Amino acid sequence: MNREIEKILAELLEQVEAEGVFFCDRGGNIIAQRSVNKYEHTENIAALAAGSFFATLEMARLVGEPKFRSLLHQGESSSIYMEGMKGDLLLVVIFSKDSNAGLVKLYAKNTCQQLQQYKVQLAPGERPSSQILPKLELVIDETAQPFTNSVKVEPT
Amino acid sequence: MSFINFSRKEISFKIVYYGPALCGKTTNVEQIHKVIAKEHRGELTMLSTQQDRTLYFDFLPLRSDIIKGFTSKFQIYTVPGQVIYNETRKLVLRNVDGMVFVADSQWSKMEENAESFANLESNLGDQNESLDNLPYILQLNKRDLPDVAPAHYMDFMLNRRSVRAAVFEAVAVQGIGVLESLNLIAKMVISSFIQKNKMQAAEMPNEVAVPQKG
Image 1 (cartoon, each protein chain N blue to C red):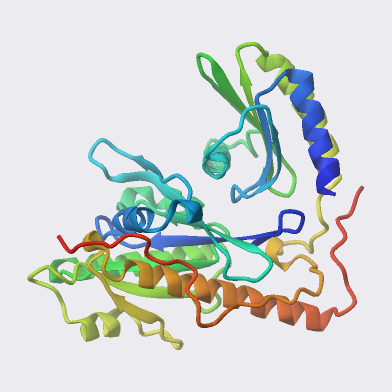
Image 2: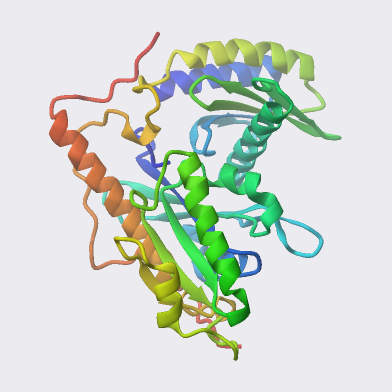
């Protein structure tokens, strides 16, 4: 499934000559991505994009709108376009001034329709973590710590 | 919201640091960023005002190999503590998997601690969630200051639910208690996830996750 999604994102990347395309969820978790440039901080980009997009949903509610479907941040050389989908999913497109916001909106809409088909079926009202899972044998080392101190922190 | 990406072999969890204004939430995350090796963390993002007060959230992505065969990714968020930012707190709290409630140990802050804890319970309730169902721990911060309440008093004040939370004493600005708090909440979140996964598998042993097309 992921390869098919990445193919759709790659198509969008080419169509609008974007620099990067991310498909993520409301929590900023990246489901799939394609980019021309290697972005170092993709997790931060996704988290911020999700945060800002879903904040605008709240603004929409406060002004009596059901939602704002998309959001565009225009910069001098790079811009970011975000479009929301059902199931609290988000498409984020990063494009340069070589591309065009109108073109991005047009093709992004089509991409969203294609991506919508890949939503995992959930029971109404359930959190995504309760999706039907394969029988995973998850093993955790009870004696290990997830994180260790790599630096000696001197008391100030 | 725990999220599994099977193709990337990643499981993502969201942990939120909650507490009253200026209690040390951001300091916790700054210390975590300072002490964890680069290969296990990403960039620290801080959305703050000119006075260094958290405006929207702080965000730090972390990675661990604690679950065999999977990369565990932790999204660490802090909320703004000021009372006026309650709507923002609600947004950040959505789909949380675990929390660290950071309390300011100074006597003068007890009322704010209690209000913030009640606010957390209320905001979770608005999302049909509860501290009964979500892993959380209490961190009693600023233990180095002169006029602090005894730990047992704060434990009594903030830890009166039917299931008591683990309590850590901390001096976040010096890194004391910071990693310990993080490690425990991370393990609690993972354990909770593994437990839910086992329960689901037991209920539907022959089901396989097949993303539905159409």
